[in-house]
Amino acid sequence: MTTAAQRKVSVIVPTCDRPAFLREALTSIRAIEGSDLAFEILVADNGVVPETSAVAKEFGAIYLKASAHGASAARNVGLRAATGEYLAFLDDDDVWLPGNVRPHLALLDSRPALDAVIGQTIHTDPLLVPHGPAWPQDIKGDGNELLRRMLSGFFPQIGTTVARLTVREKIGEFDEELIGGEDLDWLLRMARPHHLGFVATPCILFRGRPPGSYDALQRRRISYDRRVFFRHALPEWRIWKSPIDFSKAYSGTLMHFYQYFVNAAVERAERGERYEALRAIATALSIFPFRGTYHLMAPRPLREAFRASIDPRRRATETSRRVTK
Image 1 (cartoon, rainbow, N blue to C red):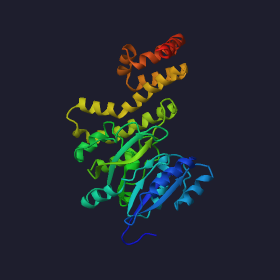
Image 2 (image 1 turned 30 degrees about the vertical axis):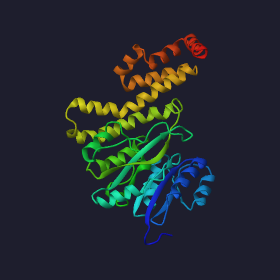
Image 3 (image 1 turned 90 degrees about the horizontal axis):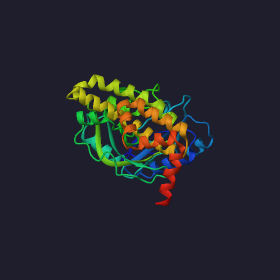
Image 4 (image 1 turned 180 degrees about the vertical axis):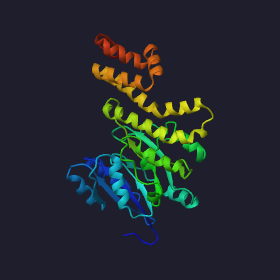
């Protein structure tokens, strides 16, 4: 039960058959509560594992069943049920940091025109060991600068977001037709009219997955991120100085896919998975044909992955060289 002095924040946690990860996520949420802050945790489940509801109950969360697949559908179930003054989010495999939420609320208090605030992400390996500083390190101002960044490759993690509950009616729900970029699409609806702010505060540990471990999903997501880019970039074309700058923004939006498949090709080739390595190379070429062709010809990792994929003896030789060094 909240007191008069507490802010009530509804935290939406979509989950699908990962009760161990979910327990970590909910632990990190409850750890931030205090005399000034109370959380209504809404666990929206579109999985089938029975343990999920038990984990939700363990943390005093409201368990909701999502009938449709996908993170958007689960988030929308939570969005409809939220009763807090504010909304926050956390995917079931990520973890909040202690500094999350309060700086967002302070900025929302000082700037009534803002609908939501995003913060920084720390990327980690699957064991939540960080492999870099909080990102982005800084965004000088919001407005068009923040919008340009978000349409050029900066994808704010939804777990860094705190929004006023009024956005539920103001901008609507997550687009359930998108299986990629749906959170970016939702945030861009606030960034375009300059109603999205930023705080340079590390908010979450974002659990990464190894390259080559989810190639099929990444292939499906490419077209959705393209759709989100053009949905928001074309109406805002005036924020770029030239068509060249617009093209660079588009390239930045898809760069993480390109880099993923380059890394996946290297990993697959080193494991001797020739067919999957070649598929990863082909996908990288489909994203950026000219860049990919250059990287196949130049002394780059993509060329080495290609050579190892078509000539297993080269892979064995390279492995032997590494072992003897």
